[in-house]
Length: 153
Image 1: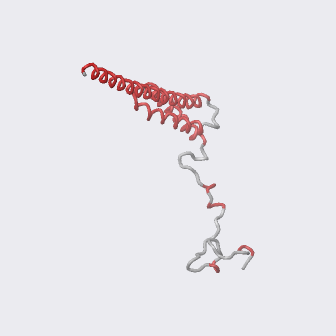
Image 2: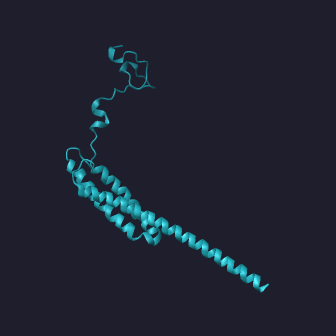
Image 3: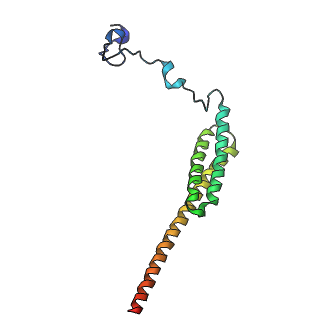
């Protein structure tokens, strides 16, 4: 056995002489086969402006969805999807714009996150108030029926 396979007792990365029908020979991974050579097709490392442009578009979309969420917050479930999208897109935009010097795009992303959270909070408050009013109305109706039955008996 040579120095490269010294101490090898079988397993996945053996030499060709160690291969059998149960343990095939597989060469050890090289530096070229690791994840360092992977390039994301959306954000190619050769062009960092693409990442910044995508972050700017996501930041603007986040702010728009946040505004829609805030405007529809009193309409029940209508604000849940735009609010969630505003928060998620804003966070992704903030991550993409981490190295950017453009404060406007970063502020758009932050505004989208804040508006999305505000829209979701107002929606939650309106839904809680609606539930409390509904329970109170049902209790009052039960009280009136109980009083009516006492008076008629």
